[in-house]
Image (spheres, helix red, strand yellow):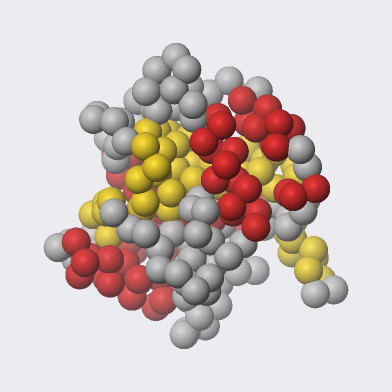
Length: 214
């Protein structure tokens, strides 16, 4: 089985699905991480390069280096949708499962990436499940709760997820920011409380098929 973790920016893969990625690897899934961005954030007069952090984070999660499609961060809306989708399709992956973003996110790049996932994941040749992940902060701050309806037990994976995100030195924040080590653990504990696990990651089902889910 093959999974495609299709995200807008480097660090989204760990924030949204760091525990689930580990579970898929343990179950012998082939997991590919793809980010539409170029891995460099230019904002508020400074530049942050997350590429080395992403390589280290993905290694911690048990997967290979992420593929970068090279589009400018926070400028996806300036690119034709066909170009974004074709860049991913050209990689030649044949996923059984795609994990991407939710349309309820505040971040416009995330919303656009969720559309790309639906285009790439059209079941033309075989069934492809699609799950939307929750990104702490952008999923919190849009005035609407993340529509969680699928949970993955990450009790055994939570500590490694936190260590993986800590590789992103530009992104790790002190508590009470949701991108803090404590914040990530509290969110997983909250979703565990919702679902009956000690720690969990929450997803929203876009399309689901038996045998093609984490």
